[in-house]
Length: 127
Length: 118
Image (cartoon, rainbow over all chains, first blue to last red; front, side, top):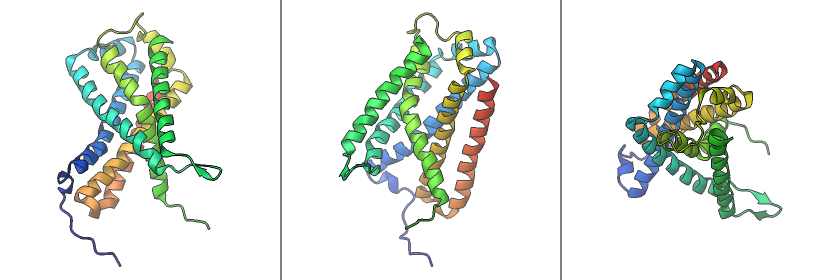
């Protein structure tokens, strides 16, 4: 037996601003996956030798690439912020009897984000 | 009390791992490939072929990028599958799972092959 499901319009997410932001948050995943595909292309070119690799590095300097990167950054940044805000609310961690406050977990995530970001920049550009 | 583990738990773990990996690592990488390199803000040509090729040949770098990329694919698959269900495709949920999780598996295999080849 299946429960009765009240019919809902497929356009329900346009009814409220918070629903639209929810939809945008869901759509960020296209940009994370898309950027990962781009990373794979870079690795593929790297495996094809110096000329192919130089080609994709030169392509990074085109205006189209820069614009795509900025759009992608906006979505991925929104993903990161919402992820660090929401995950502590569903992640229940106890130390002894006391529940570790969500704010502390979120702060740890943000701190970790800064450390990982600086480490990546150091590793890719400076190490 | 023992609870039966549903396959949903596996997809959910991959979704969560991918969400975390992408949130931590991708913004910095996008700034590098989208701003720092195109505007020439880096010093001493760190992106030269020999240096990057040597780094990407290391098994640890390959493993880290494989996890980042594959988990991000599963993260996207899970979010998209449920978003499409939310906008009216719930009746074909099984098909959505097959397409999106299948796509993430294929994508992960391609990622492994590409990274192996470097």
